[in-house]
Length: 361
Image: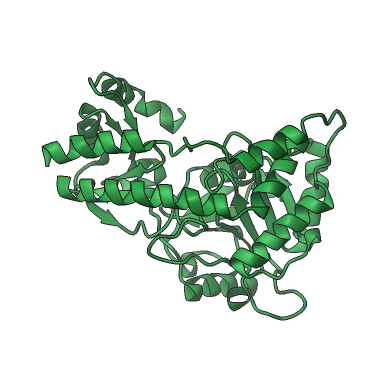
């Protein structure tokens, strides 16, 4: 059963509230796509020919420029590959790498469920970890990092990132860092494994054995466009390119054009961050007044909240207030006393939830 289907009864309860549903469960963007991106998409709408899997050099150069400007990565367009949304890449990467029975795919104990799904799709063993030192280096073939974390919003320090890189390189394990929330740091400044302070600053091989995954869904409200990319080790990127050519896994040409425009404009990102910061502050204050404790949550689009009781009891209680949140056990058994609260709803819906929580505090 798809995990989110389990929320349907609670959604029905929340929908019945006289003031309507305040949906903080999935975390889908609700604000408009910035005009500069819409115009770029429209201008490229008359593209009858097939786009390429690798995309035009202009696109990969734009991505390389953003990686250099935003995360300090020294990288060229030959080490970049656009993908059809980050979830597609996460789910199918183990398969595309040729992993299978006997191999292990490791991911954080509290994590986005698709890491496990990707392992199962190729027949590999999915392994959770709290610390990379717990893992069996003889069996792990793919090591996932996720910072900022979904669901907890935890940010790994430069030292923690460096230690994971050193472990992976020592044991010849491919490390893939899911950095899709990197633009959304609140009480911490998230770093990338492609930064020289983490991976080394030598002129050759500094990205050997490393990949990063980034998405424009949240930073630019482009969840509907399915715009993302993977970057890092050029040898691995080239292998993925060849496999994905056979699979026809192509970002549509108008979306490629929109991505170029999105990465060239930092103003809309700052505006969207300001919206999210205000919503985050309002919800956090109301949740804490209601009796929740917020843990981590220093980055990303979520508040990781607990009342120190089973998460489904909390989901049910909030549904009676017309507020829908995600149960923490969606992200692993150790999350079973937490809920994830996404602050991606409109200002009006956030205010409605704040008023309901405050009235019951």
